[in-house]
Image (cartoon, rainbow, N blue to C red; front, side, top):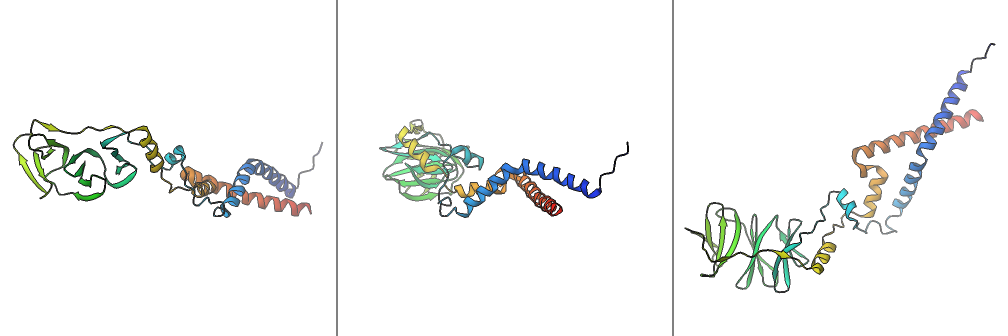
Length: 249
């Protein structure tokens, strides 16, 4: 039995129809999301999304933001000195940059905090007085000598007696025996809770998250390429739909 060959135009129409259906089914959910997210982004300011910082920790971790709290610090009366996210905190107040807080102690009317690269001098109420950065060598330990009531700083090769008034470092032949080096203690739960709320970075807004999802940047380069692919598919959907409609009419 002889079969009539299918005309070329009809073959193209069948091919376009199949692709049109496949692309439409595959991209329906993504198209709906892009449409809804685009609509919301157009009104982000009125919805206050550009001012609302996210506080959801897993989402902040996805953006590479550290939200961990250092649970220990040094207590001075009813106040706490701690090292949070490379900053020195007096209670919930950010005082200064501090990559690592080695120790802190009270000396006369001052509080001294030894960081890796500096000694930070505070008043007894936590106000910043001075930052000392010029040392004979890096110090890892700071203590008080009970006998002389002087500040002792220990480096890798030498120990020093530190004169805070004249900012002099006097080398010591031996490390004194009767020295007191404070140890950190656990911060109270109420302080940890206040720091947890204080340290959350609100620079990432919900508008930023929605925009990153809309553009695919939320998932890195792979997400961007996927959205690009969807854009090409939407173009194909428009072309095949228009061609099929014109052929039908």
